Length: 75
Image (tube, rainbow, N blue to C red; front, side):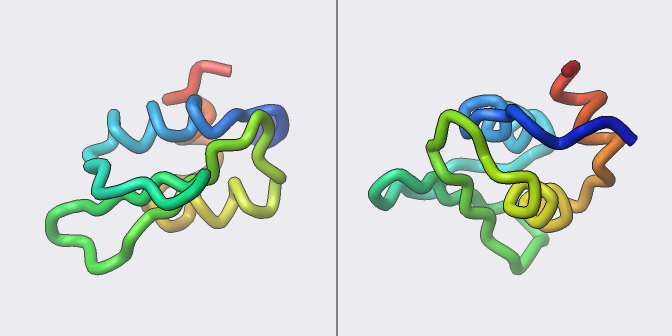
């Protein structure tokens, strides 16, 4: 597994859209996404660098493993 550091909100949002999440709304500096058939909502902060623990939770909510996320992010 690679390192989950240095990812911006923009990069994470791109992976979310590629995996079927749809933008619902923006509140402050957080983008909210939903997915048909998934009762969970995904909130992605628009930060230059997302903390590794926060990113790990976002990846888990997306239903991906860290390795799958890194492959999709191509980093």
